[in-house]
Image 1: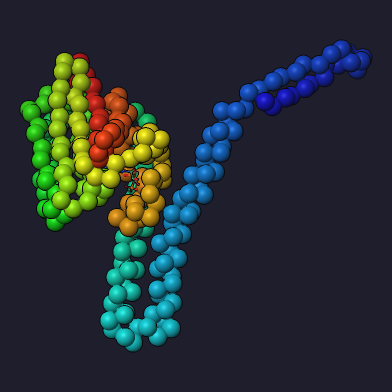
Image 2: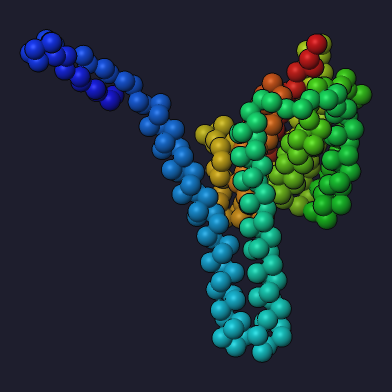
Length: 257
Ligand code: ADP
C-alpha cells in the first residue's frame, strides 16, 4: 500500500485534522516488475547471439580467416546467429504491435480450411526430412471473422513447434472440428511432451521448458506468446495438453453472428 497524509488547516492556520489516502499499488508494482523482467529478458536474448557473433568475428580477424575451412564454419555460425537475431527482432515487433492493437483487428471472413491445408502443405518437406508421419483431416469449416495473415501465423507456430519438438520417426497430426458456435483446431504430436507445471507457462514470453533445446532448434521463445495474443484478439482460447505421450495444442475461434 502507498499512504498519503494531508493535514487540513483552519483559516487561522490551526490544525483541524488530516486526510489519509491508502492506495493499493500491488497491481502497479506487479506491472512494473513484469516490465523490468521483460527488458532484462530481451537484453539477455539479444546479447547471447551478439556475443557469439563478436567472438567468432574476433577469432577470424585474429588469423582464423586464413584457414578457409575454419573460416567457412565460423561464418556459417555467424550467419545462423544473425538470422536468430532477425527473428527475435521480428517477433518482438509483432508482439508489441499486437499489444498496441489489442482486439482491434481488421476482420474479414477467413476460410480456415484453406489456411490449415496450406500450412500443412508448407511443412510437408520438413516433416519428411525428419521421417515424421504427418497427417491431417480437415473438414470444410465455416468461415470465421478474422485476420487471415495472423491466423496463418498461429498455425505456422503450432505446426513448426510440433515438428521441432518431436524426434525422428514419430508423428504429428492436425485436425479441426466445429459446432454452431466455434471452430476447434488441434495440432498433436508424439514428441517430448510438456511437464504438467509448464503447460500454462509455455504461453509466457521467453518461457521455455528446456532452454538449451529451444535455442538448438532456433526458437525465440515468443511463438506461443504471439499465438495466444492472436487467438485471444479473435475472441478465442488456446491451451496445451500433455498426457501419456507428446503434446497437443488446441485453439478455438468463435464463428461470429
Ligand atoms: P520456442 O521458440 O522456444 O519454440 P515457443 O513460444 O514457440 O518458443 O514455445 C515455448 C516453449 O514451449 C518451447 O521452448 C518448448 O519448451 C515448449 N513447446 C512448445 N511446443 C511444444 C511441443 N509441441 N512439444 C514440446 N514442447 C513444446
